[in-house]
Image (tube, rainbow, N blue to C red; front, side, top):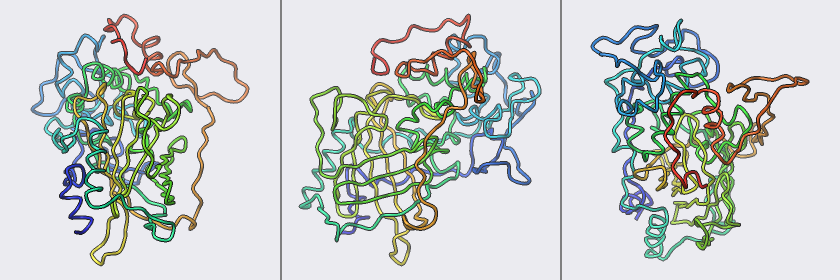
Length: 430
């Protein structure tokens, strides 16, 4: 049986790839362009801008750009018009974070609209597999492999040659997790009530208050999910040995996944782990080989935030499957990276992300992989990200990094007079 057929017959991997739409929800100041800078003849994408409303759309009396207290608007959170039918990324970039603002001349009142008749099916986001925990998922895949006399054990001489530099697919329509193809209310259906609140808080401070607090801006940790984001982790280096496989990516800092082949988790702590009972920024990962498929389980992750996406808790775990992609002649051209995320605290259902990685070159060809270090040049001053030059003196409040530092800033400086619901106990690993 081929690797392709084996995957398709599996209970835990190889389901059909999620649908890829042709259009984004909008608005996007740089259109479909994904690179740095503004391309010649750039055409922004929007349904209406500068205070206008799209034809056939009746605006709400109040929305995320005009509200005095988004917490009190909870009944409106499920209406796309509350966000002017913008995607999460549309809200993130609307003040010009991606170099082309669509906020209008009288911000935030004149913020642009996305397309209310576009969205992405929730069924294409949630996991197609029946498992409710990563442990169950991993155990099922391991049992399938053992039924075929596996796992496969490679030596250095027989190990698959996946070493190389890869480019992840870049189009904004490639993945729901890039945030451009689904309406915010659809995103909210994936989250528990507490994390819905956190997500809308994040969207408001992208849009209504223009006070985004991106961890990379301050050289804070990037967090586990940054490796899968649109503008982070797009260039991938895979380094392989029989005992350890490294998945290396860059954002503001280097993002490293260490896959320990053949190891087992210690399950005596709060979550399964390899080392001390202390959450790690990128978690800890074990894995095994089923022929040409590398199957991994990551646990012991520090809860954090996603750039333009959801917050996640210390309960987040992932099952990830790397499988080879080959052309019509059978030659290796890259990898398929299938990710299923489990987080009972943040998610209503497990969710799935599928990325294609195209091999670009060998590890020792071209420029070496850069190990990124982040030097702080901007700081949260009076609630806004503020660039500072050497020699400047300013007042700085040290954040509690393990206590949602972005929210500490928002709530201190940008939510005066709002009636914030009491934080649920036991959240964010506290």
